[in-house]
Image 1 (cartoon, protein in one colour):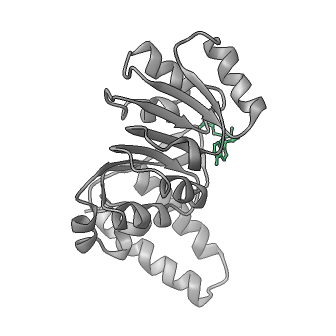
Image 2 (cartoon, rainbow, N blue to C red):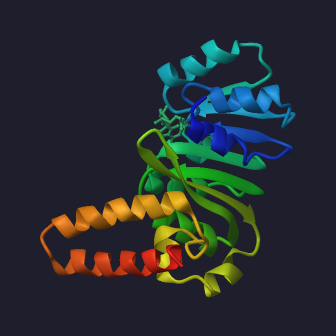
Length: 209
Ligand SMILES: C[S@@+](CC[C@H](N)C(=O)[O-])C[C@H]1O[C@@H](n2cnc3c(N)ncnc32)[C@H](O)[C@@H]1O
């Protein structure tokens, strides 16, 4: 299992029912089964060939249910919904169609839109971390039902863009932003780039305190 998947798996608590939407290889479902974290476990993928990988890893009689469907339909009714390795907009679309107790999410893009969607739907973001696996950086988010709207009242633009806990020390986030900052300085100084540079300088100030 990769460092990214291992970090995501650590966020999974015991739950009445669990679904991995976009399970592909099936490693996360294997972890949930092996650690007996739920009596009801589903491996879901919209693609039959992807789901076949999970079936091959887990075996047809592992105890997990295999669901070949769009997560926007399949995730309804589960207590923990896990989605990793998809674009943020797709994740927003899927999560807007279910109301679990807990989401564990790792969007590959448009993370700000995921944060806004969770908070406005009253899901509180209790973990929001940047992690590094190999040379790549990933965002991982855990949100629970209730308290999101309250948190939104004290959430500013930097928190939506870079993470709810942007003002807490995170060495990996610092490293990622230093790289983005250096890259931006090498780009043409458009108004948009200049605004982004100012924003990152603000975060770097917090992260270097
Ligand atoms: C890049 S893989 C990520 C696999 C694994 N979750 C991970 O993070 O390593 C994305 C998977 O999501 C599946 N997928 C994309 N959109 C989906 C949807 N709406 N519902 C269910 N599965 C979807 C794809 O078929 C693919 O297997």
